[in-house]
Amino acid sequence: MSLEDDLLKQRLARVREIEALGYRAYGRRYDFTHTIPEILGAYGSKTAEELTPEVRVRVAGRMMTVRHMGKAGFAHLQQNGERLQIYVKKDAVGERDFQLFKMLDIGDIIGVEGYLFRTRTGELSIHAEKLEFLSKTLLSMPEKWHGLEDVETRYRQRYLDLIANPEVRKVFITRARIISSLRRQLEARDFIEVETPMMQPLYGGAAARPFVTHHNTLDIDLYLRIAPELYLKRLVVGGLERVYEINRNFRNEGLSTHHNPEFTMLEFYQAYTDYLGLMDFSEALLKQAALDAAGSTDVDFDGQRLDFSHLERYTMREAVVRFWEGEDRPATEDVASPEWLRSHSRKPTAGEALTDIFEQRVESKLIQPTIIYDYPVETSPLSKTKPDDPAFVERFEIYAAGMEIGNAYTELNDPQEQRRRFDMQLAMRERGDEEAHQMDEDYVRALAYAMPPAGGEGIGIDRLTMILTGSRSIRDVILFPLLRPEGPIDLVREMRELDEGGAPA
RNA sequence: GGGCGCGUAGCUCAAUUGGCAGAGCAAGUGACUCUUAAUCACUAGGUUGUAGGUUCGAUUCCUACCGCGCUCACCA
Image (cartoon, rainbow, N blue to C red; front, side, top):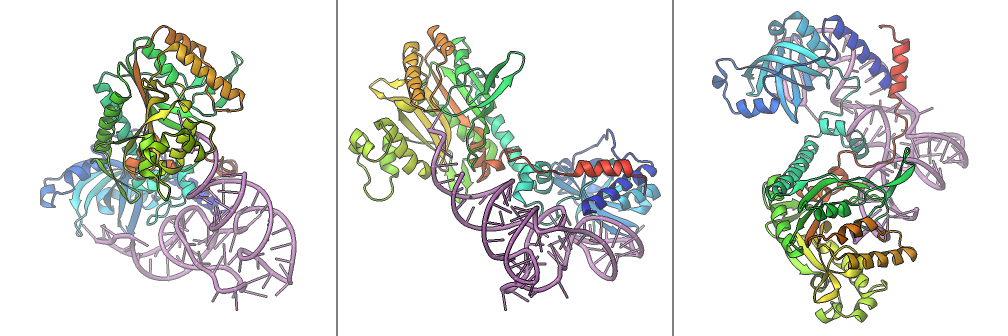
């Protein structure tokens, strides 16, 4: 017989004891007067004298510690990540509530009514006069001092992580703040939030392998989107001149500290601007997001101080020259020379070679928030070329802490040119490039109805959150990151056995 | 997919050269009406990730597998 078995048996017996005392083991509505953070905020700095006349409160929370002393005891209740002590004295709560108090387990959820006071050691506490039982834990909580440290358990059982590790809760609150900051800023500029299909008959808008699913009634395969881009631009054609979407993309790729197969992107499109306009906008967006999330434009990440008050800007060629480390630093003429580029990369074209060299030698060095602009045309089938150099497109990416966090360009709105680019991608696909873009004829048709000139941008919410919360792994900013399925848990089997065989002990 | 590392009680961690698997917290019983990592006494809790192998003897050494982490590859 396992411990878990024993514990379960004990706890299930306790449920019956609690009910025998006349309480519900799984309670219902509890009308509280304050949340615990509200009490700490309002009375945390009040002296004992200032707590008279009596401040009466009703609060609910999860019991995290308990100290019994015969006919009295202390416990801490936790709610919304903060803790408040309660003092339960038999004389004050009466026989029945005190019986209940003695039966409580760490992790149980209770309601307490009483008045605020300060203990001899000065801690703000509730002098309990009435207890209510609200919900019973059947399993034991993580260790009270070290918390829950096992990384696998933290990701698999995020609820335990959130209970035991208050800083985890803060990360996800910051994540929510970042998203709401971005939303607020977009709304202030008259962007409209939309939702476009996540299940798509054709996938596009990025270079990636998709997940495939199936619709039974229509009997067709559908792809989970790798990007919302092509749908959002159809909306720009339709006259939604400023649109955005914040939602999930799915890419069938490996996992790493910077990649989760489903991840959250903000994508927005603005008619009548171009990538230069988006650079200015990006700077404002990120600056304000940092202020709203971290309280400052200076953000500490992994021992570095990142300055979000502005974005440095380099062309891709400039960046290769500037951030090159080691010998043979190229000159400005070198990075413009197809011969030099091809001699420093195995990629077939000068443009792909430049991108390759940039990714190999520069990307990880871009610690400060930086815009890299002017990309080779080969890897950008949806962006507009530079008027004075058709080998390059008006595109930029935003980097920080060595990671790509944003991607933007002046949108290609010439349908004939777009058709030619798709044809090029089809040729690449023929040659075996699984990630080459598919032909999307309806998208070409949409452009054929005239899309206003526009700029579009995507910002990776997970990676931005990593940076603004100091998280080194993307799994620390995704509540339920993808993991291999867990083995048998066995809890249900044990509960079933205890339920069937389980006459009251 | 490759390399490296980790996996011991519900949680956090020990275990000498291969020699009786331990502690704290959590749990149970008892004492205690201002404690706060409460204290004190006693009790229970283990197929050492799984399966093999070497050995008189394996938590320890070897092999395979499972899970997780880091890293490389992959990933505009």
